[in-house]
Length: 442
Image (cartoon, rainbow, N blue to C red):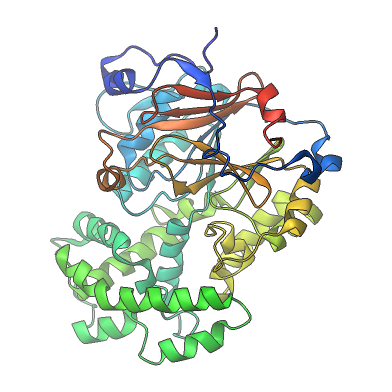
């Protein structure tokens, strides 16, 4: 039987992928766990919209999500999916395969934090963009946008809605500041215009009144559970942020200097990584599939129905530029790259699901929820989700007890259906077009 992806090219540069990516494939297991024990009965189906013709992406989509600062895992995932082949040793040394020129690569967000090197990963993505005939879509992740919010917060006048956003990034952002300091500032006169330690602390941290003022400021924007969760999270982060910096060999002066350099690298129009936020999209609809980082809520469902994804992405970029950081980061737009459908998140109800189906969306393909044993299909809130964060980055893999470099991808095409490739599952999972039509039914 024909395999769903091209065979990995037999090359010494692909040795690990050849050894660890399965070359046999099986029908996607649809059991109680993978369906989240929430399969819909026939009587619950949105029949009117479900019976509409299934639409496939115009060209195959290769979805790779949550690379989290691990360039090696990202490039190996492209190799595992048959998109690139390495021309030699080392990163940023590859070319597109014939298959790679025929697909769209969708990066599902969370490029930053956790992994070995934030800057190497960004350079690998930039290198992919520059390949001739490369078709790449970059989606917004919560870890990515946290950096932007944090950098903007210390560049603007402090208010109760924004003054916590820098420290809110937490310990996972510290490696990026260390990389930036070492690669751009170390050995230079970095401290010339950097204030003393006490002043840096005042500029980076929220003041003491924030904890009593924020609940009133957030009332009406966040759920009660969301406000409580935010305050508790910040209490922990304020207590520990400086400790994490010191453990990495950084004083708050180092961090402040690195953050100023990050503003130049990421936010200035001519910065080396200015493309990162400029190219980002909130959602991408291909056929009946909606690609995003996290999930949806009722408000976003109505936006997709009434105005479509082009409008949603335009609204996302306009909101990125707004001065009210609080209003953006706790909005329905930001919920799309943050939600885990908790009580603290903005709600998705049957009303929202109805709108999403009516908009022609039958499946959500997401990252954000990491899985140890490959991709998973689950019905959440009455909507089919393909969970495609398969724990790629090295540091997460160590924490989860997984060995070796993470690699894998989710491929969607009209010939084979949905294909889950992961080095942590013994076979390639394939959900055929025929099986896909019946996934809602018990």
